[in-house]
Length: 342
Image 1 (cartoon, rainbow, N blue to C red):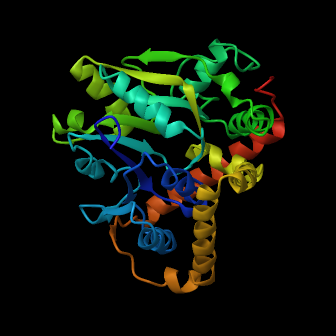
Image 2: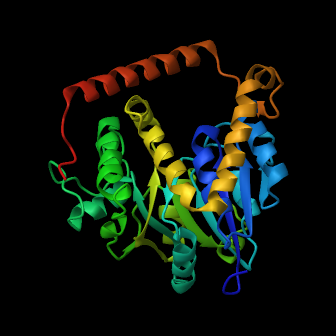
């Protein structure tokens, strides 16, 4: 309990290659009473990863998709039914949040409690179009041209080369130098404006008021639809930072540039000075090694959830789109446009 509330973190899981860096940061926080891992995947290796960690750490609670089916983000909504205890603050984290300020949970929970008038609150996020807009307007980052405030901005949200430059700028100029606090820039209320919910906090009692019935796209629901219906605003705590790895269309370029490996190298080195986190990270790495050795065995197991069957025509369309997306990413990278100037 903290200031009269239980604190529950949750993640729609997920991918172990990212969560190897998220788990230690969440589990090491004394403020977190429980970590709900929403098992929204059919990858048996990822599921085994979650099971082994849950067996070792009682704070982890595996939550299974209640409809017994998985279809990417389309099946996440059902999990919100488990997030409406009246005495609880919930902290949702994307599975590819790769870095948090060391006192992230303390700062964001205090911010949540101190702003009861808001529906949800969010930190400032590295690699989130609306957060990048704030950094631009406040003069914290200099871009090659003015980019407007759009959640799905064609460059800030979509371009892999932009995301790679943004992460590299953050890593080189602010994270490894220990000057990330220079990016803090105050509080920002938002209303009727969609933003990517890479990490959000809400009161369980607010979801209980409508039985946790989250309809359609949960991002649209939390950032726009429900606060508008309630006549409430959302708020960004610009004095608290996290780093979000990638949106789907950016991932290919970020992998090509080795961005995740750079965050991993930084974190593993930084955790050597924090024994509580180091111990958890060592357990995580040992489990990953075990899964790697048993990968063929685990992949041969039957799926735990029903999956939507995809016709041959749809598969071909998806492959074509993926191929075209990769070509666009390659061309985008080869053009060598400098988006982030300083």
